[in-house]
Image: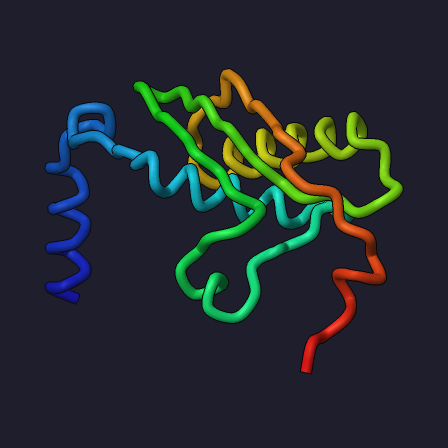
Length: 129
């Protein structure tokens, strides 16, 4: 009972949320969320394999700059053939904007999408022994 009373008293003594501090979302966090979100689009292929998957090289790749509560993002993806590239870019832009806003709370002012590679589905599915 005494612990409950102390918790209630401590809650009453806290400053208003706006005066308690601030939350900073790093560029690296937005970059990672954007890359994962781009990979969620159906026509986007993850070109990272083996070692490159560990060091995060390959596509999809993202770069983000966060200033205040706004982020500017550049995304590079590989798309499957024969998907219309304008449709892929629009879907990537929509998904990245939605996910970044939802998960980080930052407003997205711009998402630049570059389709850096086009991959035949049969080629992407093959494995080299």
